[in-house]
Image (cartoon, rainbow, N blue to C red):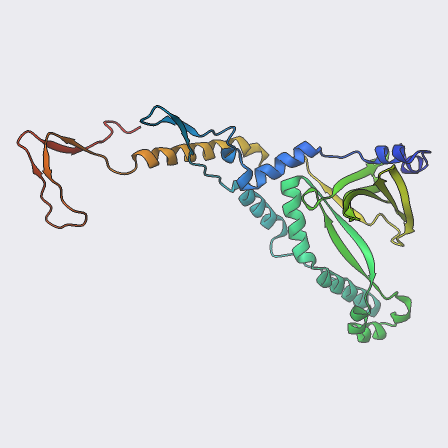
Length: 318
């Protein structure tokens, strides 16, 4: 169904239902974030890696916690993938002798700097590689300060009067930031609308909102106590959908997730083994009349004639 047909449906509930079709399920997003956050790994789950059951001298059962060693391998994979993608940053190059083109290039560089796109691009890469989807939302704001800084260059290029005193800002949208992303594509596979679901605090209550962006307007809907209702329709004057949507089929570490979980389990088990057997265990047979003190030099052990002391060792390496 085309976006014009969806926005023309008679009931608002039908419009919202048609637009709220996620590319990635909430369960998949939650699982990706769980794997990315080391303290939420399976090794820390007490229902899957249970405590050790023991029985004390009185025959009463008790539980002792086991070692839980999570490895932030997913973060390392994402960090390296982001570094390979972005490198030392994105460089903008403009080879021209035209004063107007040079001035426009200066405007783009100023917007790039003020919007901190070097940092935001790395943030987008990390979100995309870990959550599998992200988006850039661009919007216009008043900014006389930027134009005053560039007044000389713009005057020389004779384009001062032709430019509105506005500048571009960008907001990163992602599931971990509280956004739900709903791109809509036409029959050719081109994105003809983008919807952003989010919650806003209103009168002490979290109210669900849905912003729908087309190439000309932004439509806002709100889920109030009476159901979904239309809020407003605003022209954004961009000429295009002011959203750049990113999607990849799976997280960067998906192919090695089982190996990571296995490694965490083995390291945790090995740590438990060390806790029980890492310190030397001394076996004493017969009567020991005197023991050397800690740190004493020239140690002497006094034993009965048939006594013996030795260390407990494994006969074969496990």
